[in-house]
Length: 439
Image (cartoon, rainbow, N blue to C red; front, top):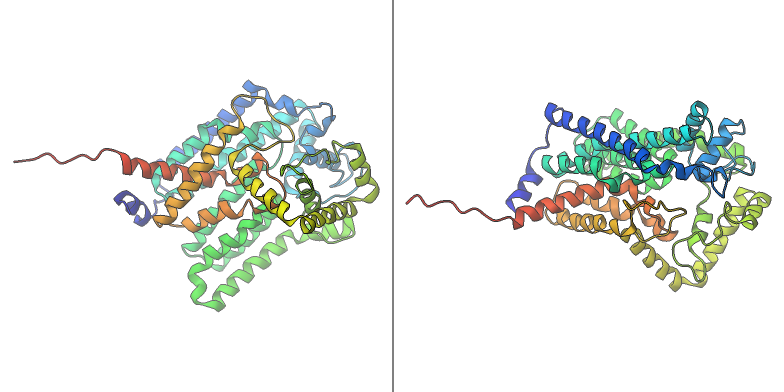
């Protein structure tokens, strides 16, 4: 292990209250927000979410549709806008509810609402500078942390979703990064009240994006690892956090049971999502013309069968394909692994702006994956949590289908790993100065 790596791994964590670093991060947050908002107006990307051939559906897609249903007095329902189909669990509740608040203030599907939604996304994106700094300083050192903060603030690669897509990607990235930091804090020592807050926080994450839960057990296990010597204490901690998380999401579960007539865990559309990428002759990506908003025949099926039966039927077709063609399913999963990381995946809609092209995304993937190897080999604090976070989180998308936007929640951690790798290579490859002879 190099001297530099040893100093990073063994140095005591920097004080988060350090005034200079705090000022730098606050400045980075302000710059990040300003850069995103200015780019939104310069590029005019927000116009892309206004009415097109699909009417207002492209304004937030299902999230915008549910938000409109909320403000028009029909409750949390009708995810495909043009059709009042009743209550839904197609989406988790947090982001559509936030979007409904924007509709109430700025009007539904208006330019002002689009600007407000993208500004909200930009705030979420800018605030990610705080957990990047916190995690970086405690695991990889001050230098890596501050470089990563300013790269996140200034690099257009990380602006895309905040200013072009009305969806929860940046909120999910903020929550994921904060969950990582929460686990770091608990690992250092925590009281019962901190574990209660941890459980409540994961409940909020689940209500925002259930896909984040792939990291919940990893973060909890890593945080509680020092307590494993006391099995009773560890179980008490784990059960307490789990109960609090369940209590946090239970009102939504009860709502689903009462509104839909059946129990569903936050979202109920997994069977349909599974079918979009798994059928004989699939390209491993999805959007094969089977989406209700794009296919009137499928929309009629959704309306006539009801959401639960519709999802169940398509899920059964996907599982039948998996049983009938296990080798083809395995090949599709391997293709999806590659597509998730190399950036060459099909989107519902694409933003024809030269700042963002699929080939721009694989470099970050390469840096992050190599950075994870370096971090593990050099025993960086929390290296296993970094590695498991970026390797386990995508598993649902390997089974269903990948999109570039699905990777965004782990990109703050990927950035830290990439900056760490570059720092270590710099330490290894820079010329060594030989001391001058005094004789």
